[in-house]
Image (tube, rainbow, N blue to C red):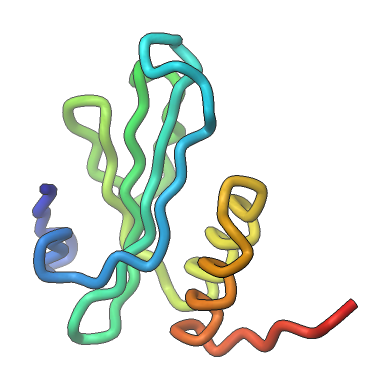
Length: 110
């Protein structure tokens, strides 16, 4: 569970919808391990949570609140789409199709 207030908005993993989560497949004890999740709040705001084995693995763009080897970052809808694209290799096809409905992304056949 993670709850943070950023920009006078509450982001809470327990009251938000988990859209997707991933693990990079590296053992958690390794310094390069990371995992993440994308959430949508009941008010339609998006945010991501990232967990790492070492704080040095985490970039620190504006608006990111880093504590205890984890971060929470509010995202715009376009940034949430970018999150899906960036983490696509770690996500199942069915999960991407489900997320696309929340984000209004149309998936075409190849």
